[in-house]
Image 1 (cartoon, helix red, strand yellow):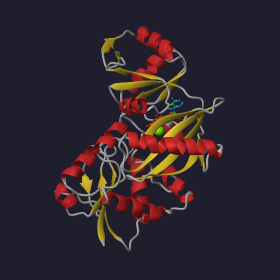
Image 2: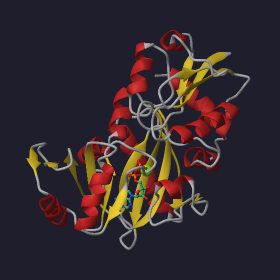
Image 3: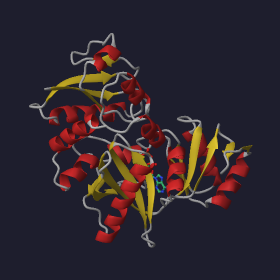
Image 4: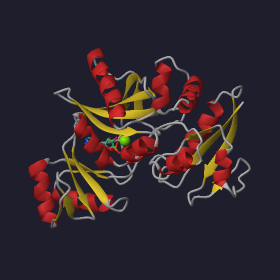
Amino acid sequence: MLKVAVIYGGMSTEHDVSIVSGKNVMENLDKNKYEIYPLMITKDGKWLDKREREIKDVFKLLKQMDVVFPVLHGLYGEDGTLQGMLEMAKVPYVGCKVLSSSICMDKVYTKIIFEKAGIPQAKYIYIKDENIYVDENFDEIKLENDEIVKLVEEKIGFPVFVKPSNSGSSVGVSKAKDGVELIKALSDASVYDKKVLIEEAIIGKEVECAVLGNRDIKASTVGEINSAEDFYSYDAKYINKASKVTIPANLSNEKIEEIRKLAIKAFKAVDGSGLSRVDFFVQQGTEKVYINEINTLPGFTEISMYPKLWDYSGISYTELLTDLIELSKKM
Ligand SMILES: Nc1ncnc2c1ncn2[C@@H]1O[C@H](COP(=O)(O)OP(=O)(O)O)[C@@H](O)[C@H]1O
Ligand SMILES: [Mg+2]
């Protein structure tokens, strides 16, 4: 039997979602193959064992495992920090390594890579420390509020989406239709990160594709988000029960193929391994595909898109977890 530690909870804003994902992963792991060690990280960073006793020497424990399965979302879990610790412990782990995890956690740097790879995406600019504009050459220019508004009008055009560069679950994300809303949105987003992304709003469908593999990468079919609110906000994701997903997405086979190819290309561009969920928009009218982001540790709840997409493609939840563990040992 392989000793598999499942790490869940965590110190990010997505602690609660991760608990649901983690429990679900543990329920579905093949008990004939794996001996499970639940490790729950509290919001303030304590590591607890299955009897909820604090673990004194986490590092020593991790070194005794055959595989670690991080089921953490957001900072200190999905962003390369935990992955760095697991590298130091020399223990195989499921999912993306340090570099790809940290690139994908940072929306600005993800954009820079997508740009380099020629993957179509929404127009954007970014602001640092509330009013410093960082231009294409990474030169920093201090701007007044009205100058930021003018820049957005020139380079993007309203409406725009404003988001903290490092975040998840739509925390700190808002849509701004004019300068007044933009300034408020910037200050709301800067609570979560000193880097803030301002992006062209793409009106249309929101769709997601699951990828699986290290060198030989598979893409699932494409699923569609039917958000209960104007956009897929925190409420629309976790609270408003009227949000739904449709698998496969209501798109032509050609569009689905185009998205699957782009998902694999994007995953390779960020040097991904193991798994990711790659999110896109399909613009109404033009049917043009824009990449939005890559989630290196997507939700693993019963209703989450990632396992559902594979289920549709013929890989059950339990088989999927076995595949992920096998892939982690092949790195
Ligand atoms: N450029 C955009 N155009 C249209 N909707 C967007 C755009 N950016 C974000 N959104 C909406 O906001 C939600 C959250 O943004 P996202 O970039 O996915 O951040 P998170 O990492 O928090 O999921 C998306 O699921 C989508 O509904
Ligand atoms: Mg998202």
